[in-house]
Length: 385
Ligand code: GDP
Ligand code: MN
Image (tube, rainbow, N blue to C red; front, top):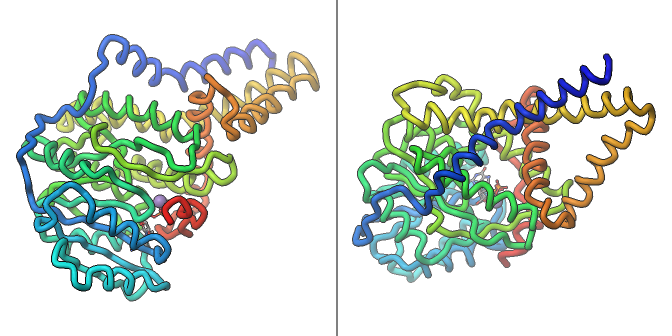
């Protein structure tokens, strides 16, 4: 193909990839809402079931339980529901932690075999008895006032679920930090439009009566539950006042495993729920939020991959072997970015890193991967010892 054709194809791909972000960026120039859109009521003190799924967390589960007990919320109104599928002694540690403790109360569900996180969570949600369900992962730390902020949101009758912000990335990954800051702005805007798409494992809170089961093989369980709640009629929002901490890797190869899996969960969820796109009954969630996420998650990774391929071909056609500078430059960008060495360009790398994961996720899904169980990351858990 002639190089000018290739360059115009490339320009088209770049424009199509960037378009939703440009629309978003333009929107956020004229309209920059802050905080949660909910009508928060701070005197609301519903009973809370804290759902904690565990798989081989013997190293860190006790400190997680300790931190739950130190939350600034009346513990006599709290029940902790641990759903465990471990092969190690996590359940014994949990039980002995609650011996002689009056509040909070414990409901321990021991699965006889590991069938994946979604199955475990469906069981725990069915067993949870309180008005509000707070789901938290073992390998994260939640701010003491997070539950108070969450229930203040849920006091608004229009709101059925709320998630929070990764306020501190343990391990100091600037790649993750940059990505999370962009994501928080997008999620704030989405929430003010109607509802947000992504819900976060370290902290998500749901109105118990709005909860429905998620797919047994779900690997985006929190986001899927929020989406289903939105489809049921309630708004599901992001509140940056709800803060948590989670560890993350910076290095390219180490990031892939967790990010690729999380990406797989989102791609598959959006694909399975694509009938919700542009449905008038879902308001701006169906008209704007879901299409934006579908584009950024399912479509644009193919455009980015195509862009790199076309740019390489154009480089080869224009400059012969010197055109190999294109893939080399991409490679250098990845190397520098994964070492947090890009300075002001680091956020751009963060978005690229996400696109890489989404593309690999699509390939893995096409190859039939994604059964709902995975190896938990021991190295990331060292941050919580
Ligand atoms: P990631 O943060 O997306 O990498 O997921 P994690 O591996 O950290 O798992 C999130 C939470 O789910 C942790 O608290 C795990 O212990 C727990 N978990 C993972 N797989 C299972 C499972 O098959 N059963 C149960 N009950 N919990 C699980
Ligand atoms: Mn985790």
